[in-house]
Amino acid sequence: MTKPIRPTPMSRRRFLAAGGAGAGALLLGACGGGRESANGGASDAPATAGDLSLIQFFGGPVLVAGRPSRAPFGVADADGLLPLSATPARLSVVILDAAGTPVGSPLTVERHAAGLPKAYFPLRFSVPEPGVYTARAEFDRGLGEMAMQVDAAGAVKVIQPGAPLPGLATPTERNAEGVDPICTSDPRCPLHAVSVAEALGAGAPIALLVSTPAFCQVTICGPVLDVLLGQVAAHPRVQFIHAEVYAHPGSDPDLADYAPTVDALGLHFEPSLVLAGSNGQVSERLDNIFDETELAAALAQLR
Image (cartoon, rainbow, N blue to C red; front, top):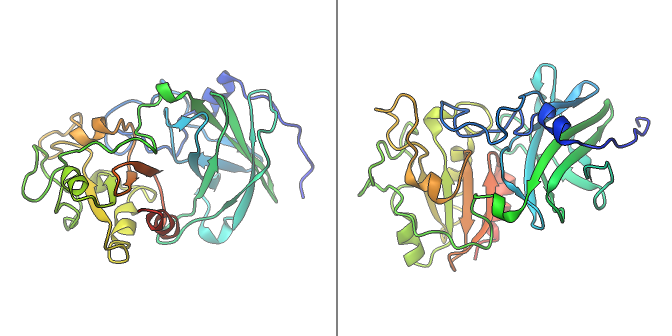
């Protein structure tokens, strides 16, 4: 057990120095050009305490005050993300406000890695007010922390749970809607049979993955399409749909032209899995990283 360390306030300057968008944030462009990080070019250095770091797998305006938030992170040392065998099975995480005061009780966050090459921790929390917060975890080797910007609802454009899923004409095998190719996975994935609009019209629960397999080669965002495909047979009521990020990557080497789905959902990062019930309302978003266990639990809640 480490000696307790008095919480220190997290100023806006310290937040930026710690990497507000996070070293692990998979912002659009991080996998192959595109939009800048929403933090205006903050450092990519992870927040470190001792010889371990909490590496964010999120970034930009995505966490909303007064609502449940999901902030996945990994644990790394100087050599990068820890291998599964060296990653704790669970962590106790305390959320601190800008004055260093704990917000609520400590949270136990379980390790997730089913179907993934690396482990992550899906921190779920809620804070009442916008501001810069600190997530602090305790290890045998010391303390690790990361800064998190929580915004007011009006400052976050990403589609939120409770909102209606737009009737998007996502590209299908029958109608590419100007997107070429409609799938950059090799081989092409089978999740382009119907559009979101068609699935909504049929009253089906929907699992919509926005990702670009060919241009997201890191070990975090690359496998999520395979993880999703592994759940299709177990959930026959759910309409699984994949939509690409870029409109025509083959003829646009700078990857500057985004597919309409990206803007319609307010995304500034990828991958993102948007889940909606048969009533057409978004029930949850799993952003940037998810494993078989977390995905199966989320799909089981769809009605």
